[in-house]
Amino acid sequence: MIREGLNIIKVGGAIVEDEESLKGLLMSFSGLRGKKILVHGGGKIATEIASRLGVETQMIDGRRITSAEMLKVVTMVYGGLVNKDIVARLQALGENAIGLTGADMNLIMSVKRPVELVNFGYVGDVKYVNTRSLKSILEAGAVPVLAPLTHDKEGTMLNTNADTIASSVARALAGDYSVTLTFCSSTPGVLRNLEDPTTLVKTISKTDFDSMVSDGTISEGMIPKLQNAFEAINDGVSKVVITSPSDLSGGTTILADPETDD
View (cartoon, rainbow, N blue to C red):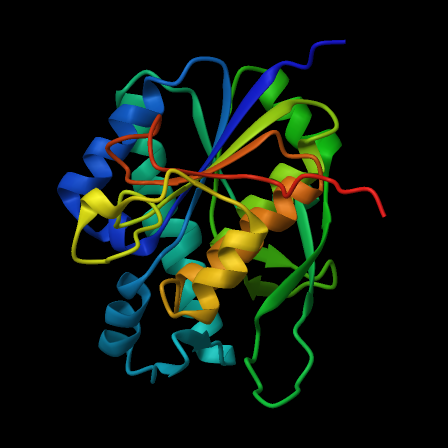
């Protein structure tokens, strides 16, 4: 049986914060035919609002420490300001968008990340995606816009990485749809030289990835993004792409390593 296509697009905070980049991304997204989901980050907007409210921002290795007070800020900003702004813009482009967090319809349930070397506070690790509810939204013709917030089903919201949400949703729906997962980046894809867009790597396998991490070609935030991509491919997602918001049909395509006989 041929499965219907589903595009899941993840857009990061840096793009959300840049008016021209966001405008271009939403135009490209609205041009995609068929069923689709948009997952967005929040970036520095939460930091700016927190500063105005007198809430201290703490970051470790680029990851936000989510205190009880910061949780209130990110819930307001990600689930409110950013999410509803994107929804309104998509409605203006003719998309029947609906803004959601993981708590709505119990879409995404997480557990609070255990304290190990670092206490990240109210940060959630995804444990469950409610595919039945997501499918009902998609089949009704709506376009879900997911904020980077989940819940623990015990009354607490949790700040959750948007890449992880996008990957988790893609993997959960891969049994029902032919899923293309696209991570929109500030670069046109994986580059051998970050200063030169002509060094785009058009395809990358897990073997390539390991080699490029070892030699330093791939580093920092691109590492967890690609790790999420490979997990998605291994769990049945049809295609994973990393590209710029202006070129949803280009970028770097992630490949599964070919199976070998023992």
